[in-house]
Image 1 (cartoon, rainbow, N blue to C red):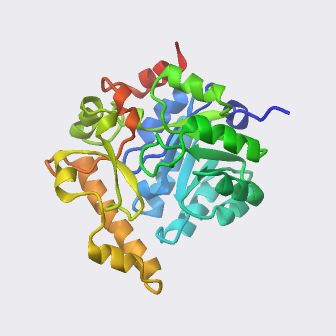
Image 2 (image 1 turned 135 degrees about the vertical axis):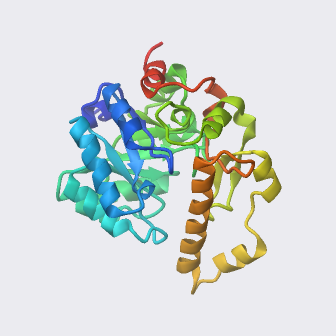
Length: 315
């Protein structure tokens, strides 16, 4: 039996998720995405307080009855996780995307309200575990994804996971054009999660410098750094990144390997990195750390979200 596509799962026109991007995704972008026939997802951590998160959900629901989601970081570095989960369930989001940890609690709570859960994974083992916990779909994060990318290329990862699980597999990474979107669908993807290309949108709240960097730089300029969160993350190789380097220093590494303090050190480094990202996202200075994926190679202009969606869905 053929697996459901993302259009079947969410009753949307095109099987595309505007991916949740830390400090980039906002309500304006999601509302435009919904109007254009796709769905959008926002990281809960883009809001400093639970009331702000609730207000954002209500704003989107007042604009449209079409489905949208919230991304939850489900490991112990997110000290607000349980409150975010409860607020989203109470407000009635349509789906969650879980990242960087076990989705067990999210799935259990979401099922009480009929909310779907899609889980970020980077390999078959993780996909099978998520299916066993009751996930509605898998988001296969490949080596071309921006942010916390995987290590396996999409044309290998999607068929591997598809064969291993019975739930739909959504591709994440490597899509900025109609041809790339169709290619991933031909590999057996139920849909695609697309992020980087939307950074260079009129509606994105980041600085013009960040948006223009997505236009001016290319795939060769994307590198991994562990200095932001302790987990490898793809960023644009700006002069500032070249200056500060991409590896954690000795103290950071020592703190990270201490079993007793690991939970608290991870939390500290994570929030330290978040501060750096926030400064970079909203202030155009020489000292910038801008997350993006290699698909900036195909970003040639800053455009409205609706125009970007049209370029992804029309030959």
